[in-house]
Image 1 (cartoon, rainbow, N blue to C red):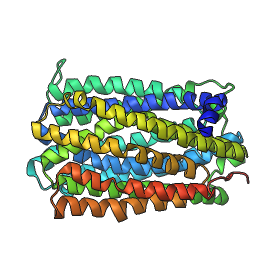
Image 2 (tube, rainbow, N blue to C red; image 1 turned 90 degrees about the horizontal axis):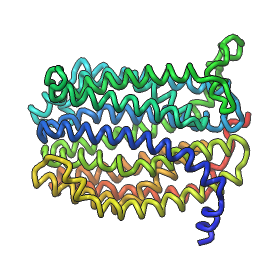
Image 3 (spheres, helix red, strand yellow; image 1 turned 30 degrees about the vertical axis):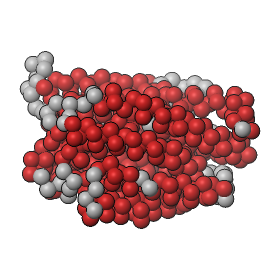
Length: 464
């Protein structure tokens, strides 16, 4: 109760949290609503199309997690550098992020474009599902390098507390995507009817518009009190600016970011193994878990927004050597996150039927979705507290190796064995397998809290 009183009375904390959380949550909400609309439109083409696109997008899922690792690792350093107003090193962080993200994207683009059917066979043996998924994948994969550029810039801007511009850009991209989705999937406004390939082309167009708009608006930004203008417009004419790949800086970057990149990639690869199991449980199970995942992402936006704001604010405070304040803020965030997820779980259970009614699926799939959403709601407090501990608190102070251990061990030692045992050995229904997989969240929350209490994360990593 004392912590609740402190949280309520800390107006500065609440003001900063709301100022960062709302735009980030809004941007995530817009993205996830777009995914929901995509799923609804593709759902009109049948359950096989939903399953095929869902499995094809697992490639983007793994890539996006690798990219998220790069952006998160970069954001850790950029947030602390912003705490000490070190613009030069923030620019260096951005450059390395762009190099890794853009270059790494081609590891996914090349096989997806040249051998899409072979890639799809990893996830499902169904001939029709493979054909539909391959047609979608070979087009949408072209957008991956563009996404890498956009996300790298957005991560750095967020670390500098610039969160409104990405919302504007996302809104533009979503409007473009929805219009072209409707036009190209169903053949409206004089466009050809292209089905799932139309959805892929719409995504590609939207990513191009998003990236172009972001770069244009950033470079039109004028210098001001927020420091963003200085970040963009500083001339590249000093020796220190040109020689940005200094050995010491690169070592510091990878010492902090490499565990995060490895974390997200290994975790993403592990979660993709779940899809390998789900894809072999039939199209009904795959469609149900795909739709459930889309619904989850919409529901969780506010909680991921809190995690994002926590990572930035804690990083800023640590970089400014305000360690005591950072510790207090971390306590506030844990209480806030836990209480809000309890409310969110209750609301999810109440609205699950109207959500299910949005989708044109069979009664079997609808029932699977219903039970999967119940499982999701039960685990939500554990899952979101883990996200806060790992993504925000531990990483903000550079305790990235502990975060790596928690995430990877949870997926590979608990989640994957549970998926294979439940889905392929015991042949349990999808909602039971899903519940078995999510037991990893209980394991992680226990070890994560114990690690938090050791205060290894409570340090300034850019002081020298």
